[in-house]
Structure formats: C-alpha cells, structure tokens
Length: 426
Image: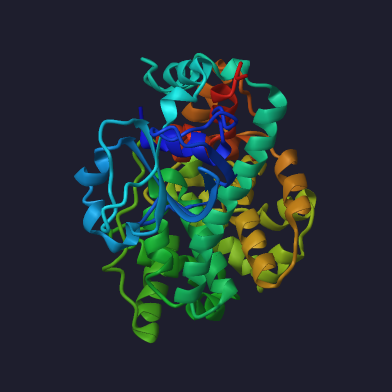
C-alpha cells in the first residue's frame, strides 16, 4: 500500500462516505476534502468536515499507519497544528496535538470496497516489467485512451514550449536565432543532436545572417566549426572551404573548441552530418527571414515546399569529402520534414502563439493528425498491447505516457490507470 493511493481515495472519495466514523465512533461528514498539497506540510489544505455534529475547517494529513505521525515528527512541526483529521489505512496509535487534545482519526480500510483494493493490487503488484497495466489496458475503452492521448500530446508540447522559452531568453528574444538552434539540433537527429546544437551555439546568429547570400561561405562556417576542414584533402571545393573558413574565423573572432565531435558510425549515408550541414546551409541561403516564413505557413504543402532544399552540387557525388559516390540529388525528404514538424516547427508555432496571446490548438491538432506516426520501440510496443498510433499526435502522446507516467509509476494520475482502478466499484 502506498500513500499516493490513499491520497487518490480521499481526493476522489472512492470509499463509503455515508457511514464514515472516527476510530472513537464519531460520525464524519465530508463537505470538502480540501486542496491537494504537493509540497511540504499537510496533504490537504482547507478541508471542511462535520465531526460529531461540529463543523471544522482545516487541514487533513494522510498516512499508512497512525504512528507515522510520530515517525515523521509532525508533533513538533507547527505546520501541522491545524490538522483537523488524520486519515490512515491502519490505526495503531492515538495522535495528539501540542495541547494534548486527540486528533480525530479515520481508519480508511474499513470503508474501501474490496474491489478497489483488488484493482490496486492488480495494477501495482504486477510482475510485468514494461508497464503496470500491461495485462489490463485492453479493458480500457478507446474513447478514454484517445481523449487522454490528446491531453498528453499538449502536455508534451507545453514541456517543449518551456524549453523553447529558455532558449529564447538566452538568445535575447531573437526568434530567428531560436529557430536556427532548434533546427540545427534536429538536423543532427538523435546521434548528432548535441553536436549540431553545440555548433549552433558556437557563434552568434548574426554571423549566419551576414553570410546567407553566399552559400559557400555559409557552408565553410558550418564545416569549419564542425572541425571538418582540418585534413589535407586535395579537392578544389574542400580547399576553397578552408580558405573561406580561415577568413571567417579571423573576421568574426570565432573558434570551434566548444563544438562536440560529430558521429558517422551507424548512420545511413543520407543522414551523414556532411549532408545535413549542407542542407542546413542551403535552407538559410535560399530563405532569408525563415522564422517569419515558418510562422506564415499554415498547411503541410507550404511547409514541405519551404524545407525541400538540396545540398550544394559537390554532394551530388559525395557523402564525405574524400570519397566519391554514385551521383544522386540529396534533397530533404518529406519524412525528414515530418520530423522537423514534430520536433521543431509545431512546438515553435505553439510557443510563439502563446507569447502572442493567440490560440492555435485546433490548427496544431489538424497538422499533427495529417502526419504519420513515428516508429520507435515505445510506439511499437504499445501497438502489441492494442494501443496503435494513427497519427504523429498519438505517437508523441504515447511517448509522453511511457516516459512521464508508466516509467514513473504515476498510474494514479493517469486516465488509463484511474479507469482500471475504478472498475467494478460499487
């Protein structure tokens, strides 16, 4: 038994409230359970109770055993002076205030239905190693799951918006600079996200603005900062980049000491950082004021058109500087743009709209529901449990569910967990 479960029972009154009595036989009527306190101090503030015909207003403290009051030293803590009711699973000792008056106590296990206890044990005493409801999630209706997933998607989006706000503050409220950093990180995908972000943070965004009209100069900036121009390669394009970077380095007083190493190992060639850096350079070369264009784009086709950019011509026959390859155009694909939409564009639009006091939730839902769900181990595993993602909105929500609820055993705060806990209750 966990105190969180007792909090859940008290907060939602999932017990027999009609015949409630203290351990001394005094009738208790709950008018207001109080406000759940998630910080230090009593568990519920400002409850209103009628105990033995007398109206009381104050705080409620909850424990597994009555004696936990003394284990936690509440008897010497003034924050607990206004406790009017002690709610426990098992009453094993009387508890007194500083003035020696006894605090009324309810032994909750006397009023909780056996079905509720069985549901709790079925959920939390599971031997399954992946998620607690692995054997019972199929009993939850699709309506409950789908509504919960939409809430979880926006919960995840809010978390991303908070991170964007921190980046905005660090960038002196320059939205263009924020977009560049977010895009750089996501151009690196999972393997090189930190390296790409460290590159974007290694110089002021004004340097990008000043070099946008010259693609080779912009590529030289990116490759030079990525420590990719330090070899002896007798290739005209490579030598030209070295020369341009030496000039930029001196002109803007920049260095690459803080940039993390880039990885090629276990990457498909189209995802090599050499290719992604050229595409990123082309994106900023072709589209000045990119942030304004992103915000103005309100449908998928406009966004696909905006981000469908190629590499420079050298990369048509290369994946690395020192080896030629079969000739192919390496334009950014729709699948990659979808990842940018999920991880950069939509969170940025959401964050910017919030700052402007605008509501664009319906537009975001519409965009996300048009995107195919992501494929990863979490999404695939939920699919085997009959919870399949039909869109990117749901796959993002499922990631939030697994990481923030399942992995942290927050079933009592989950709509799916709550549904399982309340099954077959009287």
